[in-house]
Image (cartoon, rainbow, N blue to C red; front, side, top):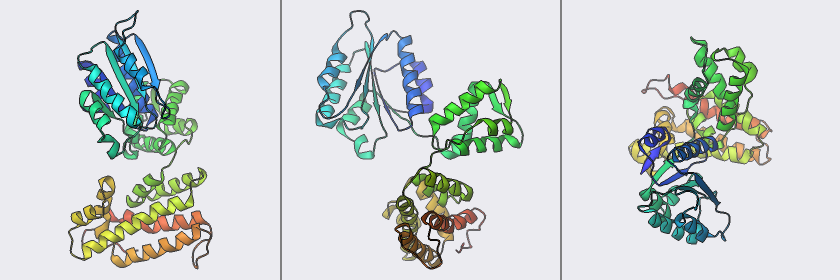
Length: 361
């Protein structure tokens, strides 16, 4: 059984299963989900808890199986928590997990909580994970998307009796807050708690948020790609400044930008050869949000424009590796900024462009 995070509260009100699997890379949300499960279990008499962390190939899986089958002398219900930080239990662990699933059938005196990082598709279709998911509840903990972050902040403020000022300033205040904490949800939670300590319940002004909230944003190279294709010019500039300040590799940033330019060019070429756009996207393995972004911008980007972008990406490749290129800055980050804007600005114009008119760069 699969659940999303917003469904967990209603699920717990209907009663507990004896096996839960949490997987995701957002520490705050994973911790909160685990805390909610533990609280519900304690309310139903699960008064003991044992924790096992899988570290290395020599982990003693027999101890986990023994704990699952043993009854305490002092309590008849226990929580068994199994943490697998790598998400890879190994051959012995895979067999032990499947054996653990079998041992839980009909056993209402134990609740097993398995905690994993974000899993790739191959792992999620593996025998051990399929066995866990089939016997219990699987909860994928997804990060909060940047577009949803202002609403998430508003909901968290409401839990402590606060809200941003009403009127036109309200959305701007939430957007400002989101810009400062993007990519760092744990720090965002701490900044929200700080506002609860500094100010009483009620409205918060933009000035109060500006004076109290620190810039704790953390940026992801792959999110940069989405921002560029989404035409979010100011956000792209912030992300590039943040990635530079965090010491990110110029080569990796260039790879992310160049990969999108190459991808756009390949799909555009396929369309020019007569393939429908959806088919071309599938053939070139463009999925999810990036598929939506490609569908939006490709009709407005011409083949000559994409050829120019491809040539620019080739020139910037040399710059980030220490070479000089005529007409380009010698500084790698300045060159990356220019390359990003050469793609981002036409993407930004797409939202105001008619579908019959191509946007040229």
